[in-house]
Image 1 (cartoon, rainbow, N blue to C red):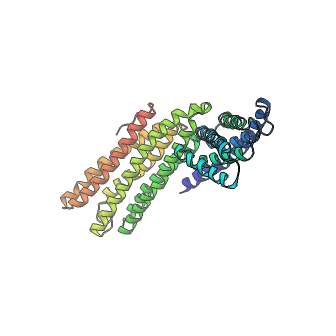
Image 2 (cartoon, rainbow, N blue to C red):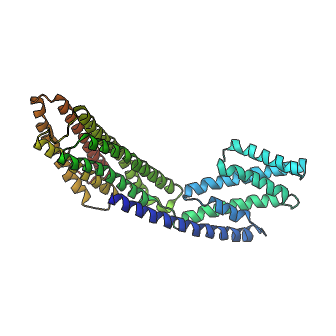
Image 3 (cartoon, rainbow, N blue to C red):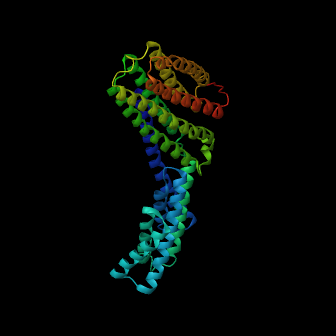
Length: 378
């Protein structure tokens, strides 16, 4: 829980910094686009330039490019509609209403999005009412818009370009810690005799980890989007590729931990007794040990992927080796259940061991492929 709180606080600080930076960059892009439009395009009132800069400066460079294209297409479409309307309809209350109707009707099939569609109508309305009697007004507004959109993209890409790699890494670490917390909680209750109510709580807890999984996937997607059209932070591409592969491994781990919690819950609900009271102390000892080792291994795996701790790979190697030994001892000890004709319990333990083995194999293979210095055995 403490790890998740610290991760949330760090993410909150990043978001506050990102918001403040966005405000500064938007102001800079607005002023620069106005100045360039006046000096290069000789526009007296180039308000379309800063307007385009404000609307196009988004969180990522990719979004800025996309919004810029939408803005330019919307303005051009609106101006074309307005020029045709002025020529044949003139300016009146009914013609303005008809103009807006036609402009938005044309914009909808263009799939300009919820913000792009109104821009067509706004551009058409301004050109029809303000620029109808001004020669060259329509062309000037198109050029202003293109300039403003270009300035927004350049400012976003060059002035402290957005990089969400750190946020994605924090979300990945938070997910690993959330999965580990479930295993440690089960281990703690197993030592005292896990009852059906506690097993149900652990199953609910395991299912709630899906939220952390969703947040980590979203953070990685956002970081990947932030790299597109953003050549100053391309060095983060390799780290994000590792995180993309790691999130698949942790996704499997979430499923396997959920499977372990479900197996224990079904076992206790069926037999209506507490684990730890019927099982031998040796079996419970090996089971709690392997849960603890795998919890540490999952957290260490995230550290290996982050690449910040050079000793993490060696720790992961050691943890997975110890976990393998504990699984072997667990299988040997659980064989005594067959002697006492507890075949159902034996199959349940076998299912838990199978999930643990899959988890260990995923962590081992992934760490070896993504970070070749890791040489772990399962």
